[in-house]
Amino acid sequence: MLNNTTRVNVIVFGHLLDITKSANIAIENVSDTNELVQQLELLYPFTNMRFAIAVDKKIVNENTPLNDNSVIALLPPFSGG
Amino acid sequence: MSAKQPKNVFVQGPIEASFIADSIQKHSSQTNIGAHSIFLGQVRSDLIKARKVAAIDYTTYEEMALEEMHEIREAIFLKYQLTCMHIYHSLGKVAAGEICLFVFTSSKHRKAAIEACEETVERIKAELPIWGKELFEDDSYQWKENK
Image 1 (cartoon, each protein chain N blue to C red):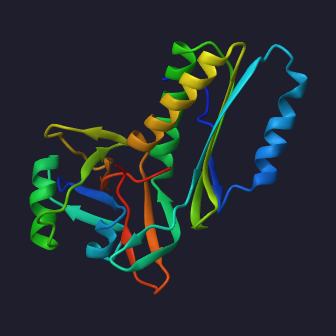
Image 2: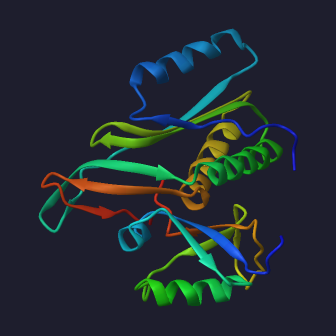
């Protein structure tokens, strides 16, 4: 990338949509998933919300570096079937 | 990563009984099969705080769900001696009493079909990014959570 500002796209699902009101959120200047969650918590009342984070369609359990092309999804507890 | 494209499993709306009957019928030419196992998930009209569930509205993270389902399918085929396996999950609105999940496994002998079917259902419920929004008769809703 020409600029050094990381801009990641976050897709939101399930009950988290009730809070964000939007299925797609763009977040800037975050280099890893911990920073992303901190940013999101400043923007939305996510306290007490349980969700997993997927980076490029894989659930991550540890802090994970992000880049401009990362696709991040916030996944509340599943309820299929 | 397998080169095979993940197979679609999603259908819009409820899974019709006639579709299930047709799926069974289609297997009559495969005479090496000796056992089928079928799981059907039906939308239950739970009563929650005096409100009755009228329907569930299903959404998914489709790209991820299809990749996960592909991995589950490969693992199940490695573990059990199956002839074939078919999976369908509803998206969108499914009314109480209608079918939202159809898992169909076939094998030479019953045990493989039964065990593969059960394991697949459990993995679908635990691992696929699908969310059910329970719509109540009074137009309110709540997000379902699998137990």
